[in-house]
Length: 233
Ligand SMILES: [Zn+2]
Image 1: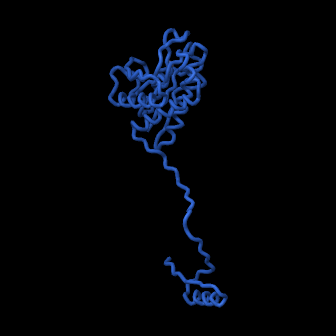
Image 2: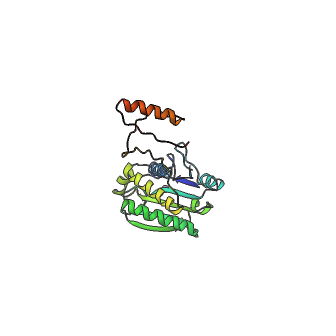
Image 3: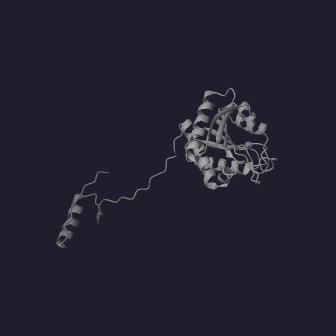
């Protein structure tokens, strides 16, 4: 199963920042990294990032990557802005987007991600919405775009700056993907230390019963109480 995680924008994208200067990409890439970290605990998956810390990747390239890999799902991670994005605004909460005529699979994934994010963050539920976004329209697999809170809201920006909040969002997104695609956790080998048992002292093993009897006799003379066990090979 190939999962594309797409952190919106890049470090060089103009605008796309909170009124106090936090870049949207910084938030998105962090949530994407946490999502990958949680997804890596599941079996048979490959996670592909379409964004880059080095350059701003065009939307066409992101979509092309997902389509040419024949990915199973596309999850774009963003942070919201209201008004002109340059002043603080009262709009708040989390919303998830799917394409106008999205498939049932996109809808189902969006519902799960949105629900998990609301449970994990306790923020206002703005619901699953439809939009004619390029990455949702041009991708050939179930595709969603999440807005993990408003960086133009003076309260929510504090959350978006915190690693705890970013981690909670990443985990919520990962768990929703896992639930939608019935992913199984990787098996961790159990290292068990026996706590109940007995320690046996053995002083010899013989192919011949006669030799075993002889040693037992010697031990008896020395005051021990040996017994002989036959083990089939
Ligand atoms: Zn964005």
